[in-house]
Structure formats: C-alpha cells, structure tokens
Image (cartoon, rainbow, N blue to C red; front, side, top):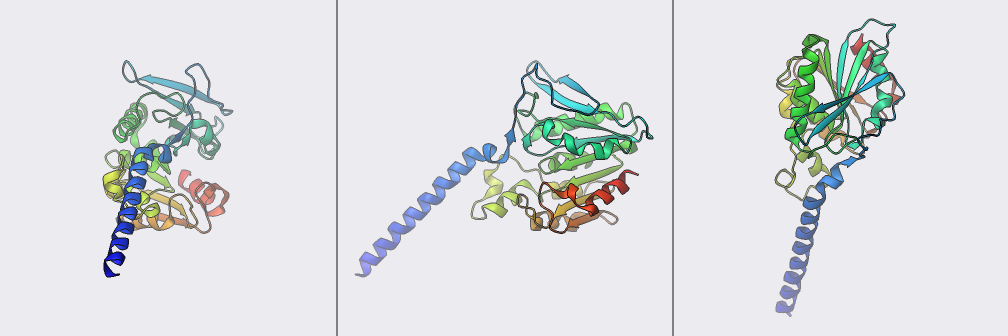
Length: 272
C-alpha cells in the first residue's frame, strides 16, 4: 500500500513537472505575440491622422526604415519645443494620435516613431534597435533645438525606451505614463512561478535608468491598472531622486488616465 501511494505521488509529480515545462516552453516561444500587438501598414499607405502633421521616413540601412510622424504645434501659441513620444505595444501611431493634442495646444511639436513591425517601420524588433532609433531621433531634435526644449515621454512599453534615452541625455523632463519596474518583474507579476529574467528576450530595466536621469522625472500610474500592476510600478519610487514625482491616479486603469482631472491638470502644469 505504501509503495502504491509513493508511486502515485511520483507519477503526479512527473505530470506536474511536465505541464510546468510545457507551459514554460510555450510562453518562451510565444512571448513576442503575448507582448507585442503591432498593426502593419503598407509602404504606400498613409497614416490615418487628422491633425497637422508630416510623415518622416529615415533610411537606416539597405533593409531597415524608421517611420515617424511629426505633429505640428498650434501656430497661435508660443512655440516651446518638442515632445519625443514613445508609444505602447499596440497597433501603430494611429492608435496614439488622440493623446497628441494635449502637447500641441501648449506649443510643443510631437515626434512619435513607430517600432519595427509597427506601422511602416521595418526591421526586427529588439531592445537594442529601439534604443538606437530613440538616440537617432534625439540627435535630430537637438541639432535644431537645445536639450532643455525637449521632453521625453514614454507610455507603457515605451517607458523603457524613454527612460533609457533620458538616462544619458539631457532633457527638460522625463514623463513616464504607466511604467513597469522592469520587463522581467512585470512578467513575474503575471506568471510568478517562472524565471522570467532568464526567459524573456527583453529586459528594459526602467528602475536602473531612472536612477541616472538628471532631469526632473514625473511618473503617472493608475491604482487599478489591469495590464501593468500598480504594485510593480510603485517600486520605482525608491529609485527617484529628490524633487521627482510619482503621481498615483486613484481608480485609474491602463488606458484611461487622461479621463482623470489630476492627470490632465498635472500634464498641463508641466507643459506651462
């Protein structure tokens, strides 16, 4: 009887280990499909944008192209600079156009690139490529304007790119909307039983980057964020310097912070 119980226990253990390994392999292989939800556009297809803008294509090499949209600041207000905006993990620039007016009405241009595989940008999505594209755009802006006229803005996935860029470049301010502590820590919040740091293709260690940012930093996060848990983002507080802000939006979710008065008032104040 004792041997039967032991055998049954080890058989069950083998099944559980097999399921654990199988699910882990599936997660590892499908991580890009889980994380990234791009929407491609054909090279001859225009972005569906209704605000004054210009599409810009940068030929990076023989095979890779970077597309961005340059949204123009309202002409009837004082021109203040450029917001370099790194968007989230869905679709392309079309999805994020609705957030641009909060900046353009205050006198800021908005430069918003698409990541490789998003919109019309070509090439392979990688952490290194995103950092490289961000650096190129920053240099283009600062060839025209002083660094203190540049606001670096990251939203969701883009907070990793924005914080890395601001960690070694001067700017007027770094603004992070719904950031994560790091990509592995965010994944661990959803699948805590797996070694996410080893499994993930991407690290995006926002917590390391924000410690190196000399410019003022403002972070926004909703307490009811269903995508990037608030408890993950709030860990960034301990890495912010004196004078930086971590603003909690009570009941805010991942995609609706602009519906809250605290968020809108703070953004407007920062852009004054």
